[in-house]
Structures are given as C-alpha cells and as structure tokens.
Length: 266
Image 1: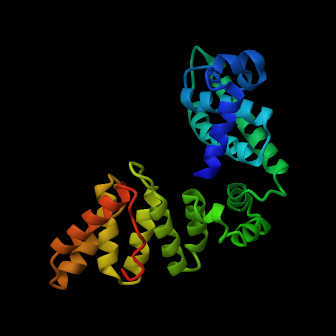
Image 2: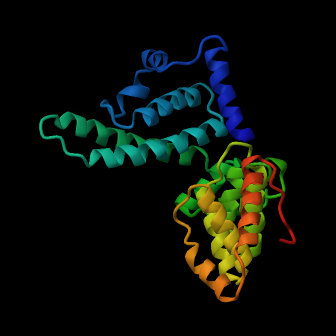
Image 3: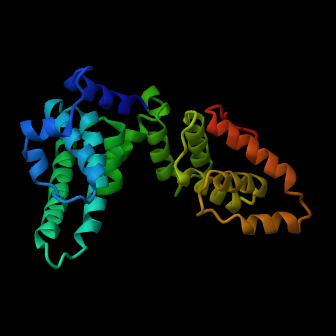
C-alpha cells in the first residue's frame, strides 16, 4: 500500500537508517506522548506503536501520518477501554491510567478529525464518513474512485466495497475482486471479503460462486462463513462438490500467491 509506505518512510527519515527510532528516545524527547497513556503492561504493543506514530505525526504532520495515527489511536482505544473495565482491588491507579489512556484517545481522535475536515486523503475521507456520517467526505472519495492511488490501494477498495454493499451488489463484487487482485503473496485478505462475496452470491442464487468463496474462507481459517446451507442446496440439486472444491483450492492458491485475476465471467 503506497500510503502506508509513505508512513514507514517518515519513520525511517526521522530515525536515520542506522539508528531506528526507539520508544525510549521518543519518551525522553517528548514525555507527553507517553505520560498520558496507560502505565501498566496492558496493550503494550498498541501503546508502543502509538507513541512512535505520535512522534512521527508531531514531526511531520502530513495527512498520511495523521491517518496512520488515527487508526492506531482507534486500535489502542479498543484495547485500553476493555482493560479499563478490569477493576484492581489493590492497585486502583492502574485502572485510572487506563481511563486516562482512553480519554487521551478520544481527545486525539477528535483533534485529528477537526484538523482534516478539508482533507483529500482517501482513508481520512472514509473515516469522516463512517465515523461522523460526513456525506461530503464520502462524495469526495467517490469522485476519486478512478484515481490510481485509490484503485491500487486494497484498503480503500475495501472501504468503497463497504459503502456500496448496501446499494449495489455488482459494484461491491467488482471492488472485492479488486481487493483480491491487489493481495500480495503471503498476505491474507480481510475476512469480510469472503463473507461478503459469499453472502451476495447466495442472495443472487449463484450457489457455485457462493460455495467457492465460502470454501476459500474455510481454507483461510475463517470460521464465520456458514458453508452448510450452500452445500445442502447444491447436493439437493444433485451437484457434485468435487469440482467446486477443486476450483476453490485453485482460487485460494492464486490469492495466496498474489496471482488472483478477477473472473469477470465467473
């Protein structure tokens, strides 16, 4: 993802290639980025990533860096909000620091939203719509659909598919196929790709298609796709599942190897 690479490049430029940016370095130079988060061992990875991203955004306040920071604040907040519900009998201050981390997240998320109201960053535009129901932001993103940076970004393609899922099944399928085309070798697409494809094809009574992607979901280790109703429907029609299993395995392999090509006449 080109936008994500821009964030990584920012980290490398700030740190210097031979001197990786460390948590201690950031906390020593800018202790405020560390002191207003939780101080115990909960959410350790999320907290560390967040602190580095806060420093990067502070040094280079680009929309891409704000976007990466926004996502990390949301991830951290989900973790620390769960942890804050754990009541310590003897160590109340630990619960308090988690609450403080949660409040910091809310404050910073709100700051980023306010600072990016006029953004043209695809990810931020989607967040403005999905979190704040900003229709102008979504219209702006829709007008950018054919731009190379949007077409070649699997995350943004999935965002667009989420938007179209309620209004245009065929457009949603095209976008999800694009997500699979952009999947790189060794990566796993988001589980909702397979779930949505299975659901749409089942609703459209394209049971071969539905079975194939439900089977791919199973091969990928996803457990939320219910393949049994599709199996029962196909077998009740006297269909053998062997050829469908072979197609699913072939398609799964293509996705895993980063070689999937959208089957327009599938």
